[in-house]
Image (cartoon, rainbow, N blue to C red; front, side, top):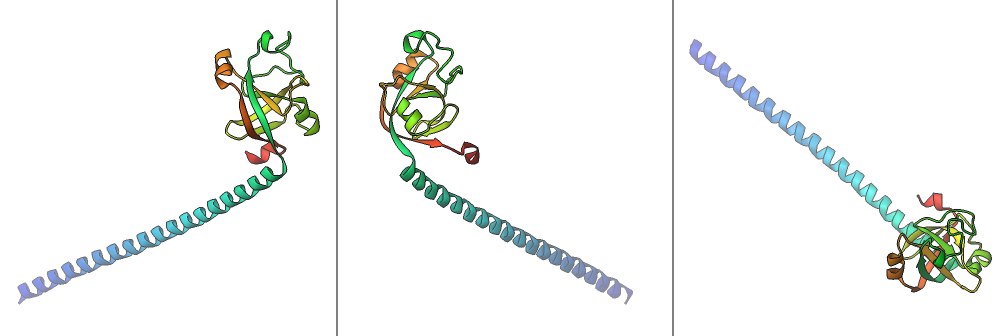
Length: 173
C-alpha cells in the first residue's frame, strides 16, 4: 500500500514538474512573440518614418531644382602660378584654396549671390565651398581645386551640370 502511495506521489510530482515546465515554456513563448511583434511594430514605424523623409527629400529637391538650379560648366585647376595668378596662395576671397574648394565665375558670384564661404552642391560631384572668383570672361562656370595637375587634366571639362547654392548647409547635416 505504501509503495502505491509513493508511486502515485512520484507520478504527481513528475506531472506537476511537466506541467510547470510546459507553462514556463508557454509563457516564455508568449513573451518572445510579444517582443517580436513589438520589434516588428518598431521596424514598421521606422520604415514609415524613412519613407516620409524620402518623400520630403524628393519634394524639397523638386523645389530646389525648380527655383535655384543653375546649369554650369565645371573645370579643374591646381594652386600653381600658371593656372592662377602670381599669388596662388591667396584668392579673391583672401583665403588659401584647398582641395574641395571652388572658384566661381563672376556672374554666379554677383548675379546669383554666390559669395565667399558659401557652399554649392554640384549634382554628380558633391558639395564644395566657394573660395575664389574667376576672371570676368568666364560665364556660368565653376573651377574645382584638385591636388595634382594630372587629376585636373583627367577631370577635363564637364558640361551641363546642375548646381545649387546651399543657403542653409547646416540644416542638411
